Image 1 (cartoon, rainbow, N blue to C red):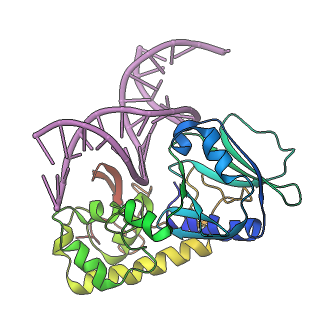
Image 2: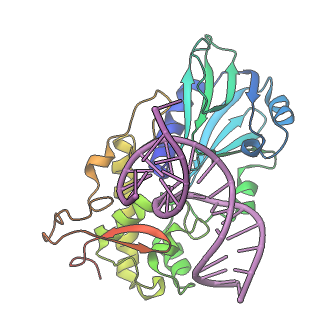
Length: 271
DNA sequence: ACTATCCCCTGACGGC
DNA sequence: TGCCGTCAGGGGATAG
């Protein structure tokens, strides 16, 4: 499941592959993926020159010269792949961007088809406002975060998963950061003390940078644009580790459903 | 305004 | 080449 570190890994890789390349043509077969008529979406991108690749939360932005962009959300199983034109497309490939460069193409694969593409014409900031995205998890300040957390009576897990509170965390990194600061996922968000919110910011930044350094987490589908899996799944401390010993106290990691999501935690270290 | 629930979509998995 | 029900999960829509 692509969260901030996986999207950041994709963005860094695509910068090297896309910047300076021009779109020769775009092919798409799934209307729901592009929010309407595929023909119109594809035609609007033909001839564009890639200038940069950016990210906010779990959204990647393919920015064209002139300022327009394509916003990409990978959903649960979306993959952005750089491939040679001869490479055969399997049944889960729903979109292809043919590049005017050394015979390459950008391929979008998505088994579940929960991903989304959208053309952004009013600037990235307006898109972030429109989608009601909160501050990015890598740049949020403790003050911003504590302000947002004090405003809700939900569990800290539900609050951190809410992209309008904080953009970038998903189920995996939420469980991991709550373990790191010793906060129980069911704790009401507005009961965290200032020093805990501070610890949350610090630990979240360290966690996300460590995951990026490992090219993200591959549980099932995630791969980078070169088709490589991430490595951070081996560094996860509680996520998916029900019954294993907590590395800090030795207690057995437990699983519960909180905020509608499978949630892993140490019953002794987190409260 | 806030919060919870349903739904999309498909592969994996378990029961029979 | 067994069939079918259930589950997972990001986020948008819908219902309280």
